[in-house]
Length: 316
Image (cartoon, rainbow, N blue to C red; front, side, top):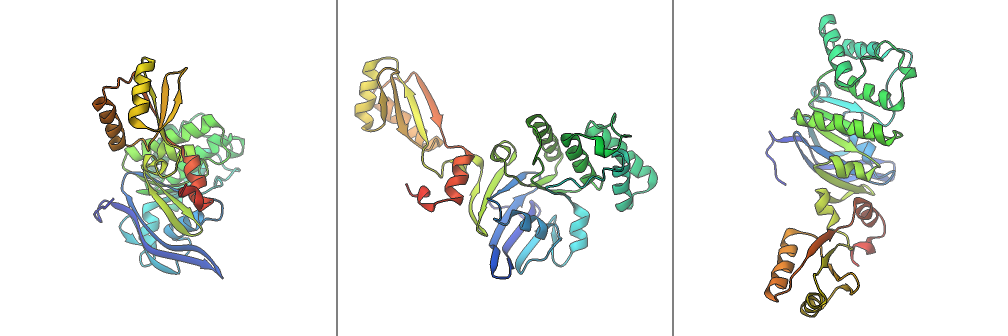
């Protein structure tokens, strides 16, 4: 996907980082469109957190260029910091302070006037369903409440780009889904989200585009649907109204796994529109009536294992 500079929220070219002899990032090129969720996947040690640390100006790259919110990360770090928010793997909430006090502290750090800080704090407490707990010490909050407060603290400065580094680690399913709703609302408001996660269903649910990082290199990038079509195992399950239709389909296609009892034929396919159209056109040309069609594609777990594991899996 090609975007103009005004559409690009995060862009990198040839980004490299090493620690001694270990290459962590080996020439990374990214182009993240404004107002979208971009998810970076990869096994532990692949370089995801290093990527976030470079883009958020916490560490420098060894080589290459990076721009965030229109600013050069190396040359304009203060401008980048003013435009971003960062929520790491572990909550930055001060447990000795109340939720309200944590937010007011962030308002002070952002140099908001006292009245503006109180107004922003009230808005965020309401928006993150923390009003009733606002005067309680954060140490008494549940895991989900602490993560919501953590993200609310990130939003005090109204960032245009937010880096979420495994934001739902350790949360129960209900709290994770609540966090997903918050992320969707932020994106609907024009915020760009750069998400790293170990939960592949999270990327599948939230991300407009996904990149897979392995051994310091990007090994694939695309939508969830595009990535799923990269690995073998996809097929189309055809169900027929009668044995005669199943027989005609089997003869005309010359391939597939047949189930005479269920009147189905399983045909290999990537699930793409073009291949589905070609399959249905073929059956129509041979006067084969199909009662039901179901597309089965690999999930992101399959993609992750194939792309970050044995490369032979991609060639089978």
